[in-house]
Amino acid sequence: MKRWTLDDIPWDRFDPAKVDPEVIKVVKAASMVEANGGTYAHYLAKVFYDDPAFQDAAFQWASEEEQHGAALARWAELADPTFDFSARFEDFKEKVKLPDEIDRSVRGTRTGELVARCIVEVGTSSYYSALGNATDEPVLKEMCRRIAADELAHYKLFYKHMKRYIDEEQLGFWRRLRVALGRVFESEDDELAYAYYAANHLDDGPYDRRVYARAYARRVYPFFRRRHVELGIAMILKAIGVRPRDWLTARLARLAHGFIRMRAGRLARQGA
Ligand SMILES: [Fe+2]
Ligand SMILES: [Fe+2]
Image (cartoon, rainbow, N blue to C red; front, side, top):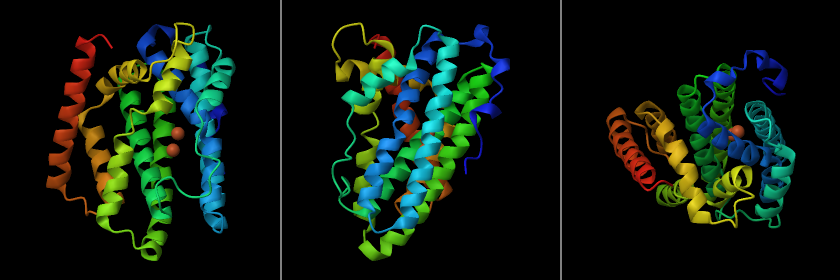
């Protein structure tokens, strides 16, 4: 059962004066990636073909991601009445193909798949916390609070199932670390970059992955404060089996946040 629905969002409190046009662009992109969650559940159901408990959880998870998509799309259409989510999403769905034709995890093992899912939820939970913090628009703020809580619950869900598979598949620390790092560095990947393009620049010439990945990152990176990164680092350490010690979390967070700030500054200077 969903923890909330679109009716719980206080739409009548929407305040156009507090909308930042740059924020609308990234919300539009996020709405499409989230709305595509259903496709990923079918892939997960194939990878975990003999695990009905996990399959059920995956379909429930996907319905929550789709609801995130619907909520964000509604907000984006409110903030920019020229935005036609359905039309843009049609294009996005056609161009971005998730690996739903195969029945083996693209991460090599089921544990690896679940580690990768945990990393994605780390990214989304800290992203919505950071975005909710960065915006003054009351409806978006409230929506981000709810979505971030869901993403945290998703992380816990995938983590719980991962623990079941670790013993069975004997996936050690180094292999989990490799999957986790691989997924972290995919964060500027095609799905987000294409979503950003399809949402905002479909009529501005052909798609260029590098250009739009950078344009997206430039707008999103400045949202992150050290505390968002710290929480994310603690969650990543837990997913790869490292007890999140405070000093280690703080040190890694300082490094990661420094990198994000440096990259955000460079992208801004380059006018990405
Ligand atoms: Fe989501
Ligand atoms: Fe999620």
